[in-house]
Image (cartoon, rainbow, N blue to C red):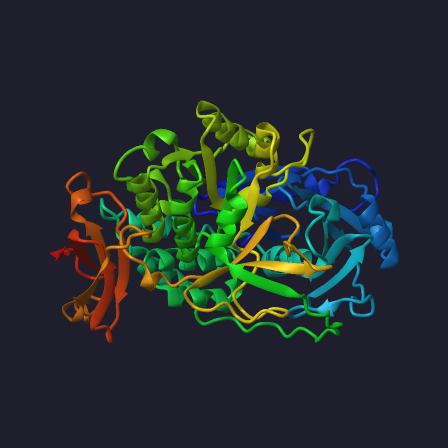
Amino acid sequence: MLPLLIRFRLIITRSLLLLGAGLGACATPHPLTQANEQQSTMTITVYNRQLNTSLLLNGKYDLNLQPPNRPDAVTKTRLKQLALPRRQAAVLFTAQTNLAPTYRLRAVRVAGNPDWKSLGFQENGTGRYQRTATAGSDLLMEYAAPLPEKQGWLYLLATDEAKSRPDASVKERSREMDAEFVTFTFPSVQQGRWPRILSPGWLANDAFLSRPNGDYLAPLVALSQSRHSPPGDPSLDGTLWYLLQQYHSMAGNFDSVEYFQQLGPSRVRLPAPPAPERPASRRIAAAPDTLVAVEAVPEILRRAAGARAVLLDESHIHGRDRALAAALLPGLYQQGFRYLALETLEDSATSQVQPLPLQAGVYTREATFANLVRTARRLGFTLVAYQNTGQQRERALQQATTLYRVLQQNPQARLLVYGHDDQATLRLRGNIPNKRLSQHLADLLGQPVLRINQTRMSNEARGTLAPTAPGTAEVVYQLRRGQRVSPHPGSDLVVRNNLALQQLPLPYLDATDARPVSLDVRPYRPTSTTGRRLIQLYMQSELTIREDIAPIYTHEVHLTDAILPLRLVPGRYVYRVVSEKVKEEVRQELEVK
């Protein structure tokens, strides 16, 4: 569970405030935890009025605001190793994630002034200290920040339980835990409360809906303004970072998506804050993996031939993932697949409306996703909504049950499930076995589900593999004792996807009759009067039915743009040109013969 991989559907979580005074060593709650207040923000804000200090957690934690003032075994052991007297430490609160991976956080007030450097900590910001280690097979991170008015130190101890994701590598776990705490929670510790901050997600969504048929430029303007606003709640930098990629992808600005991916979540504000220098660590270079790659579409179809259900995941910010799904549809349909289950759909009733309205789902607003739906419907697929927002610990089982019931209605049909990697790797805790969605569905079907991952492996050179060639997608195998196996145990197939969206036919991604079209965009270059400008291209036949639909193509016009090359199937089209500063929009018809 990465705080950076946030769904666009925003969940309002609790903000929690801690009050009190004193130190002690008893098993009863400490006076520091006795009085609580509550307010609503996107994150969980923990504030201690007496210590006048706050910090932030993402929305996937359950907190114990009045824990017994007795450290758990891990905290007790660590305090002893640090030679910090127990009577000088007061447990303020504890927290645990309610989704896997299981992170546990303990917040302790430490009196006095320990020499953190001599205890093995490294300075992380002025007067702040951090340490990363292991506790058995679990990962461990510690953080110490000075409390105001010389009230001692806030000592934070976070652990990642290895058993919550046994198939994840230590490197992967370390990277995700670093994002959770070093990038997110630890830097948020500050004096006083967080001011109320309007979420960039709300700003972007409201801007998009400012026109009844959607405005793909307005969110970019709103998010650009958010980049210039002073940071208040640092957790929102992660949200802003993700939304910048999400909405630039929806606008067709794929170069901007790559830019923000490289920039990182802690540097999206302008000017970017300087990154703290981290001491170089010695690493033993691992032997390169022996990897081989084969063309993705025929290999996936070969492996899908014997499967009743296939689960293909995606990154929400890459239209190329949707393009691969569309490329698979004709072959899957020939094999007997008749249902396409989409995680993003809000409900099955809305998913049957043609053309698909904007409110059907957040991600189907993106043109490539909308064209995936158009392609599927033209081939004869039935759309299925399987998202479930009930109790989290039952979510994967309920989703699998929904999918299984669909297949029960047609015993001969087969199913392609398309969703985010959370759906492919979700783990549960409590009384329900730790099973993924695909595992629950396999149990119900009585046969395995083919699991395909598009997010595990980048397109850069890796091991014995060269970079993925532009315009191609490939399945990667690791060679072990001469046998081809998946590089990641949690997936049957791992895909590297470098498809070029600019080369795809529109609006049907499998079309063979598309014609080259040159659209002159020079009249629509941005000016000081119009501000930024963006083109949204539609099928005229769909606009005659309803206006609130996703376009088949989007493109932000730049000062240097002249001719926009497209590949369009014969028919009539309408393009709208929306402007940043001008409310009226340009509408033009386009016919392709």
